[in-house]
Image (cartoon, rainbow, N blue to C red):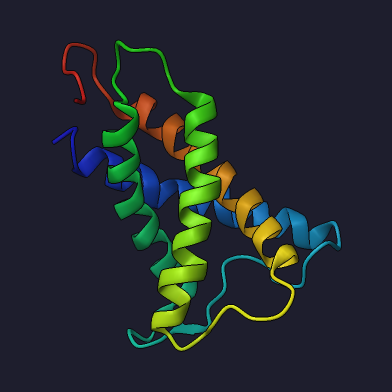
Length: 142
């Protein structure tokens, strides 16, 4: 259970509590137009974007837990989780998810990549926070 369900739930919750909150704070600071918790329909599923992002984030958290070997007895990989979230989730969104929806990378991508990196890096840290909180000592993640 600790190999799949707990990392998935951790990633899902981190998307809601860390990633979307970061987008909200960036919006409140006047740095971006997106407000976080977007209820626009995510095509082709038709569910709100923030729920779709949370589901994708849960799947990525399972991969992150496996790659970084997150466990209750081992040292927490804070910096690798931060970098994993920032790079992997941003790249997956820009080069996989968006093209599958018909949105292609074009023009000046730097502002979009910077915002994506910031929000997703905080997600990586938050996912690790939840994973460490949910895991019981005595059962290694591996």
